[in-house]
Image: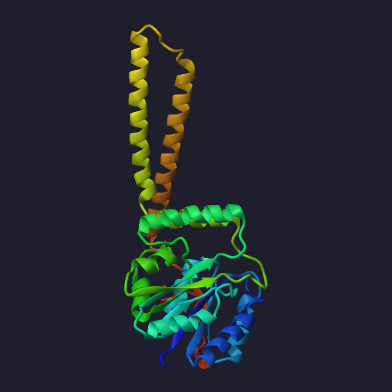
Amino acid sequence: MKLLSVVLPSYNEELNIQRTIDRLSAVLQEASIPYELIFVNDGSRDETWTMIQKAWQERDDVIGIDFSRNFGKEAAILAGLAHANGSCCAVIDCDLQHPPEKLVEMYRLWEQGYDLIEGVKRSRGKESFLHKLCAGGFYWIMSYVTHVDMSRASDFRLMDRKVVDALVSMPERGIFFRALSSWVGFKSTTIEFDVQEREIGESKWSFTSLIKYAIRNIVSFSGMPLKMIAYFGFAGLLFTIVLGIQTLVRYWSGNAVEGFTTVILLILLTSSMIMISLGIIGLYLARMYEEIKQRPRYIIHHHLKGKKESCETNMGLDEQA
């Protein structure tokens, strides 16, 4: 059987590292699937890296990557994929909210010839109403942009080597893994799962961070907000034409309305639309600025390879970043 590389982005997950290793190892060994576990420490502030080092010293199936600082989950996923040795690669959360047992089903589907097996959420677990509302709006926009149903999408997926190579080779810095891995195409299928309750620790996603995440990914993956500026402009023009005709008709009929309030409201409306439009344009200019600088997606501080004797410390840029 061919090797499965499991990529686990890790941020402040010191209490989950060993639990995750034990759970994944039990599931994959029982299914007789050869595997390697690639933990990517995304600038954690706790003892996450210490736990990864300990596991690497004790086991031959663990690989550790330590970022110089926090670069974000998307960068951690890409780093893990870039250093994976398997014929297929899976991405799974380190907190075990993605059920490891589904990896076996995904692997069997890959053996049947599927290049991309996406995990879709049958249930989202416990979430606040506001979180569900914002998530629903965000995924509606992304589904409209990508023409792929992302209402139940997740980062939990298994990919063939050619899908991984296509993702890693893309030069863009600001990526949205969840959408981009579907955008590349190839033969794909889905598998449903129920989001598990986190047993240890707490979610790293605050409401503010989720909003920032949504804005960054929409700007990175879609030009729709720029098109909306034009739509608002045309809508404003139609409104102005209708209001102008009404004003002229009433003026010629000798029944003109007091204009002070109308003028103030129009000024406030147009000023707000202009400021919002400038803000949207500014977001895209900032994203273009980040892309033009061509800085690496991540910087690796330490890299613990699969064989203990080949441990290396890289204080500079990773060659595959």
